[in-house]
Image 1 (spheres, helix red, strand yellow):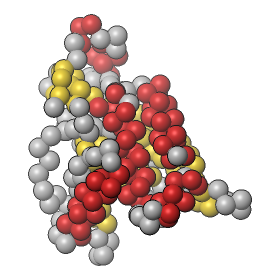
Image 2 (cartoon, helix red, strand yellow):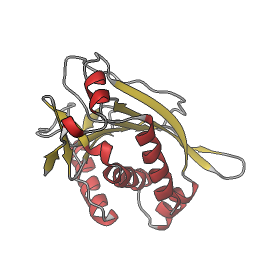
Image 3 (cartoon, one colour):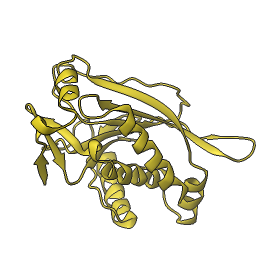
Image 4 (cartoon, helix red, strand yellow):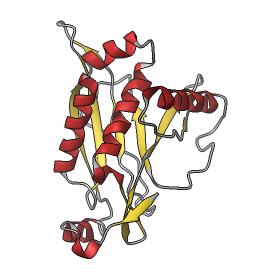
Length: 209
């Protein structure tokens, strides 16, 4: 389900109209996330750490309203729920784009995720299904690289307002602290640095529980 913003009375009207005319309206930030507690919790639950932090990512995405904004034609809609399209690696080192249904309950989300991972790993090619809606986050993990910045391949002629979230290699310090790089790219017509800060704070809080 979605509703539409009243752009004429939206405090960010000028910002939206300004940035949406850009050839490249996306901006990006990279931050370091403490994942010490989250990694330990995932091991206690005997579950995949990837699935665990993917779920926390999606809880934060669905909590921070501007991350649920999308542009349809010249209107801004607010989705009730955002799903995730994550890149899933196969045994031959190719990957496919998944579509994982979000659920606030971790067990339900994990079931959805494992089923979609298995489906992707038993297919070939990049696009193995339809993506009928844009209520998505584009998600990727680059667990081989401890990056400090990241860029994305984009077609400027393709209408896109979905945030892109990526994680890097988990690093372990001498004190046992575990950290990961988190990269966030978002359409500046919909999201500002303030909202990215809200997302990062929310996500870190969820990882610390």
